Length: 523
Image (cartoon, rainbow, N blue to C red; front, top):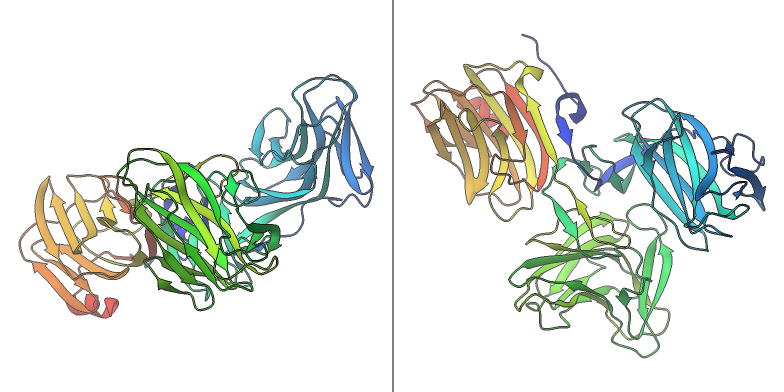
């Protein structure tokens, strides 16, 4: 049987995630698919979405006027897309006249059902927004939608400009490292800031409790003796949507905070992206009686924690994701869980840049979950490989897997779909391999301790099992029979635990490699 080589995770892995999910990834874009998206040629290329609207261009912006009693109307353009490909729609929108909201959306060719809808914009000043989706059919309609609660003939809708639709191209050599929010069911291949692939990201479900993770100007955020400048810098997601936080003249208490509901005894992890400006430190602290104290100082110039307990993750271009955790130690209540404060004395102009606040129940931070007006949940990543996708050998086989993790408990790396026919590779204080055939344990091998990364190999054959890592044979067993596997689950076990990390490389050999070969493959 010939060797099969797979360079793209999508070639072999069955994957699902019932929500979006962010990751630092190389992103580039295909050619422009919209005709006359800047409306320099008037209404050319566009038509009313339905017979109840009349479109026009005013001062270079597209708008629509209702010609009948309607609660929604707008502007449309047909699009031809490739099924299964990801696309991003961007535009500048604002409400006007009788419109109560405007949005970017995609409908089917019949214009009677939404394929994807962007955020509802209710601002009377221009807002640049985007919508990322995966095409499910070839013929689609780009719908610039106006909406209102009451029906009235003749009302004017919102305004639209700089409309663009492009295919998202992943992992191209010329791609820009971007904190990209992947659509549902798109696996996240993440990179470090040097452009080296970390692998496919597998995480458990988490919820960001901060209701406005990027809009720090919202009234839910409290900024005593501080100034906040919105859209002051390019954030890790590539848009100019990061805020600048500093203090009014003479102030030393320039806080940014938001109240969130807590549960007694629960561990919470906070995180925020921060970048040095004129000030170079970020300080987090407890300002109520509900949490064990944080009291952490992050040096944004060196990327180090200089006081207290916390973590800093480099996201490039001077940005760090600063995080820490604490336990709610009183009864369930509402209290301030998150505070950031640039060190120094305010002068009205000096400050730091902030973006992407997150508060989640858990003892370690997971990937950023954007919110806009309500908490949001990122669903779990589900990845598996059926053995009929490659040359699986029922009698003997060897597996080599490499990756990283940021979990703090039992950490599954690989598992099988059947509890009675199982190869379970996981970490619990040290490397563990559990082999089950016919519902009976055949081998239970232990290896070395890990420290955030792993390169492990194991082999199964009748009366011949081994576990190898870092070029060392950790354990063997000379009694037992191999299981018959139907599929391997990546980063998830049968108990529903998740890796919370990356699978960088997975190799399967349909034979029992020698221990010397396994040592060489993990050295």
